[in-house]
Amino acid sequence: MNQSADLTWRDGQVPVSSRFDDPYFSLENGLAETNHVFLAGNGLPGRFTDGFHIAELGFGTGLNLLAALKLWREAGQAGKLHYTSFEAFPMRPEDMQTAQAAFPEIAALSAELMPFFTGGETAFELDDLRVTLVVGDARKTVSDMAQKADAWFLDGFAPARNPELWEPPLLADVCAQTAPQGTAATYTAAGAVRRALGEAGFAVERRPGYGRKRHMTVARKP
Image 1: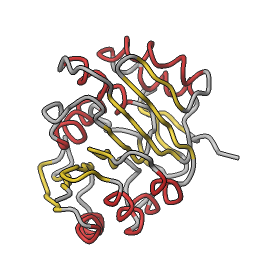
Image 2: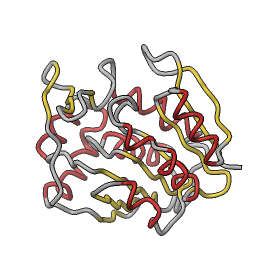
Image 3: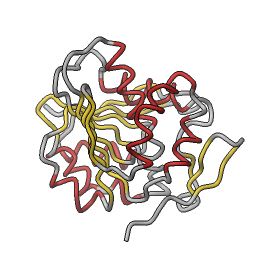
C-alpha cells in the first residue's frame, strides 16, 4: 500500500516533508525556482516539439507540471506535451491545492488539472498534455518507462535527506532512459550527484543556482 506524504506547513503556504525534513520548494519563490532550475536548465521552451517528453523524479506538489504546461501554452507550441513523474509518497490532493494556491499565476491551470488528482487519476490526457504519475519506488520503475525522456527534472528532496533518489544506479537508469541529446537539471550541486551523473554517461555542468543556492547542475546526454 502506498503511503501519503506527511506534511507540516511553513507560513501556511510552503509544505515541508515530515519524513525528509525538507521543504517541497524554495522558501523564496517555488515557481521562480522551477522556472530557473528545471525549465531554463533544460533549455525550455526552445527545445519543445510535439511529443516532447519530460520525466521527473519527485512529483511533490505538482508545481513543476503546471509550470511546464504554462510555458508550453505561452510558447504557442502545437501538439502534445508528455509528462511522466515518479513519486513514492503522493501528496493528498487537498494539500496539493493548498500549495499551488500560493501562486496565482497558475491558478487557472491548477483548477483545470486538480479534478484529475482529486479523482485519484494517475494517467490522464488533455488536448495538449499527457500525464503519467508512477507511484512507488523510482529505483524499481524508471527502467520500465516506455518513452525515453527529452528532459529530466531531478527534484527529489536534498541528497543528504533523501539519498535514495540520488543513488548512482538510479541515475544510471535515468541516463539510459534519456533520448540522445536529452538533458537533465536539478537544484543540487552536490559533488556526489554530479559524479554519479557523469559516471552514468551525462556531460555535467555546474551553473548559478536559484536564490540562496549558489550552484545547480545541468547535464546533457551526448
